[in-house]
Image 1 (cartoon, rainbow, N blue to C red):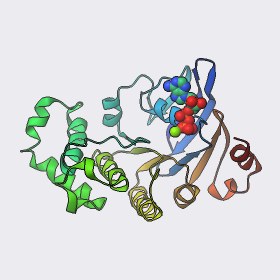
Image 2 (cartoon, rainbow, N blue to C red):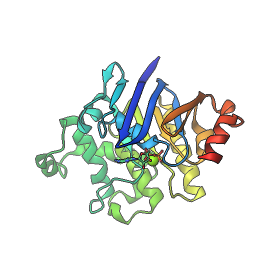
Image 3 (tube, protein in one colour):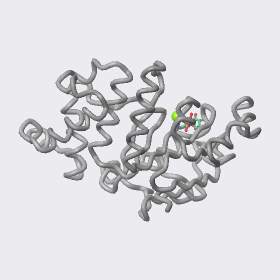
Image 4 (spheres, rainbow, N blue to C red):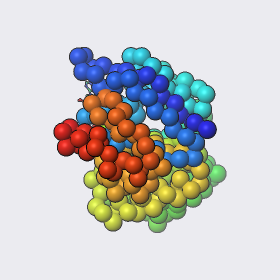
Length: 248
Ligand code: ADP
Ligand code: MG
């Protein structure tokens, strides 16, 4: 059963065709990787899934609901969470407060100042946030300030901020960007654990080691077009893919 369906999506920036008739189907319970050279349109495509960008033409449907024109908080409420290419955390706040905020946002539809006052006394959400921090291996740092974390730990924190929303679909834009190999391997293990719980994932990733460790299916984007969609074992030797990377 497909959970995310992208049909004939086009997006131009001025004269630049960033997305050229993109089609993509993500099956529920799978990890679907989107790979491609720099500037291929990967982040643009992801932004069309979360209401940050509206395609010029085409449709994006999640679980039967159109994602076009949707607000970020609505995305969370229908079961989609995302991690951006650059970590977006609250640097001044503790880790546990960081994880509580998206939980409030999901429950109340939007995060309000009122919710901020409640945050200190809200034990149910605090307990849940602690469980999520444990899941990602950050429980010991729960009361530290998030801005001081290493890059790998910031990524893990972001994952906890997503997981606390109990997403059906998790979107990740280069989750291991800038990580050392050991951190990358930890992140792969963590993503496998999340996938094993039945969360569908769309992962944009540069690092082939990550892609081939995780993906059930791979779509290759080049110059705004999906040139191949196939199982990982059929991607490696594909001449079109090699050409896109070498020529791209
Ligand atoms: P990727 O994530 O695959 O590296 P992007 O989706 O970021 O690629 O970019 C695809 C193309 O669209 C690039 O040529 C990029 O410069 C261009 N682009 C992306 N966002 C914008 C924007 N907001 N305005 C103009 N051009 C953009
Ligand atoms: Mg990108």
